[in-house]
Amino acid sequence: MPGRRIERLNEQFRRELTEVLHGVAKDPRVEHVTITGVSSAPDLSFARVFVAPPTEEAAGEEMLAGLRAALPFLRRELGARMRIRRVPELRFEMDLGVAHGRRIEELLHEVAAVDQRPSAPDAGTAEDGGAAGAVDGGDAGRDD
Image (tube, rainbow, N blue to C red; front, top):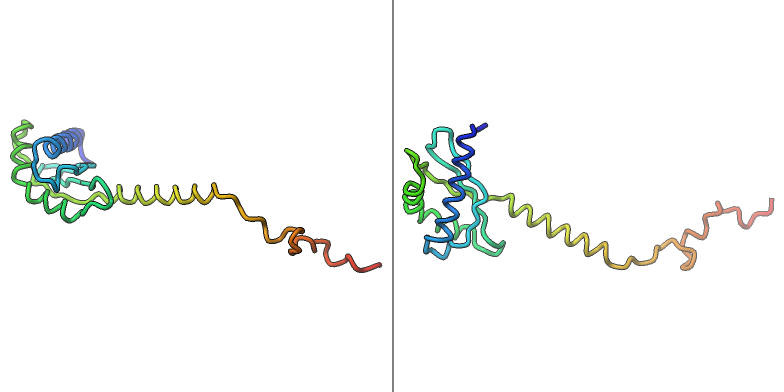
């Protein structure tokens, strides 16, 4: 489990990278990227940066290619903005949690839509001659 210092640095990396990507970067492939988290090694040799595209339709591979192309620029910007001795090597990865969350949300909306539809009458009601009318145990015709 990372120490408090690493947690603070991870959050600072996330904020600074978000600011650089949304404000300074000029590549259209990366301008709407959402950084969902950063996980650095304890010695700051590398940092895994978790990213999510703004929409499901956005091309994830194209976005990752744009981020990889901007790596030297991003490390240089982090070094200029933060006062740390060593800026970690950045590794960008898709955050699958966001896609899973979107899928769960879609499923919940589908279930809610099904629950709101008027339900069809039961097949076993007495009105339609179903099995519900013959619940008397079959003794109706006997005179014992």
